[in-house]
Length: 572
Image (cartoon, rainbow, N blue to C red; front, side, top):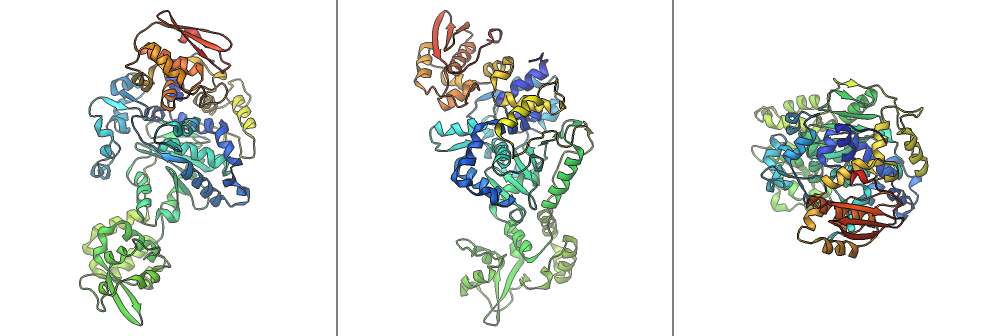
């Protein structure tokens, strides 16, 4: 418990609501959520699931695939912008303008007008995400869910499993890879762009988590539609912030808390992941992805000792509905599936001839391959777009935060937790770490402290940030009950399950209570008070060992609570 100035209070209250805007402005919150999920019992339960039987004997990459499939089976990607309600630009400006450059914010955040580079304008990204329906100063909250809130989506209509948006899934992945996949935290880097969030995991040649899926280096260059979707953010967007066990770095801030050596290693590993040499397989994968260039080529292969030719776009068409691919070892099987009517025994005029066994396609660096290609096909000089697209495909250059920062010194591995520890040991360690008087106190103690707020551990947190978040940024509960009087609201709340989505003395916010129609009596009481405050009705409360009595304009509403917590009346 400590005095909070305006910025600190905003940061700590943001640890509860975790909107896109709040995480962008307070990058500490991203890793705080990872730690909150690690402290949660929910992911530790996965270790007992039969799906993970024998996982300790698996190699690192196979473990990641195992975690991936579990997430695929148990969580949906959700980007319903109405789930967490609406705010407006002026409200957000008023919150942050004292300590954030709002002009820079508008160039970096999707809710404040950012639409990405030319690619995203062509895609009409605001329409794609449903942002275009908010054509005034009204904007949606884009909130990140804890693992408990993700799991609670199964209580909502039309959901049979958990759900979450991209940042929620990224933080879930990081915690799950640590707890179940036994990946050390120092190998996991979380990356945020204005429109997306994903992780880079330093296992094998590198692995990207992308919403529910993962992308290996081979998948990055396979030219499929799924890979093209996964490539979008790093190909077209600025990476605005990166969070790691050693700290964070942000494109908007001149200082960084991430260990500089760790960040340099990340940059090098990611660069290697995003670059490949050129082979026949890579060349054909490129043409699968950049299909507009297929019309330049014809495929030549032998059948019964005779050369056969086919327009490349027609050859790629045979991949649809087939398990065989024109770019890999199954190509000859695909050739055998082709209809004689699509094949010619003479070369097709005006097209460059591709033969899989041509020495042109022996593995080469990009520049060497281009020289060989120009020697092989001199007329390719008339197609400059081909070369720029190929270079972009084989070597994505990510727009990362500059290394020209003031790196605040910190230990190389400030979060000394490992998958070999128990959940209780990790919670105890983080409890000590957040104590300013601790002998091991350092800059990461703020993130450890925020993790307890993000995880809603209310028996060890200051109540002021919680109530600020509950009564200022929970519009869904207000809208849901807008046409009901207080007695009807009370009855409705009591008809819902009395089970909190959070165990022990952890608390849900009003909008979580309403969205999932679950809540302990204390959570329901706070929800009722949130509605009363929105109507400018005077409210107060009295608390016994088992009940919360809420008085609204002198009318009493009593809720039964199993939470062993005491309210702090000055914040009500």
